[in-house]
Length: 104
Image (tube, rainbow, N blue to C red; front, side, top):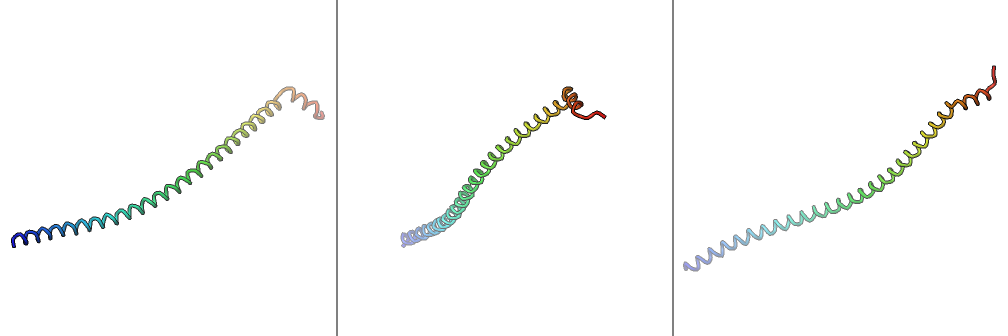
């Protein structure tokens, strides 16, 4: 009888341990499912961010090309303006203008 009582107590204690561990397994299963959902969302967001980065890289490259072209053209225009001013300020040009303008 004492042995039966001891075994019943042991069975009861082990059953409680099984219950606790089964509950823990269930909780961990829920956590895993939640983490998997978070992982999937994060992976999707990462893919979208990579596409955005690629788009921005392409857009920046195009804008840089346009800026370089614009800067080159502006430099050419400044050079042309400088040469025109130099030509207009030249003494030979002044003499030529005086010859072409009617004298009063």
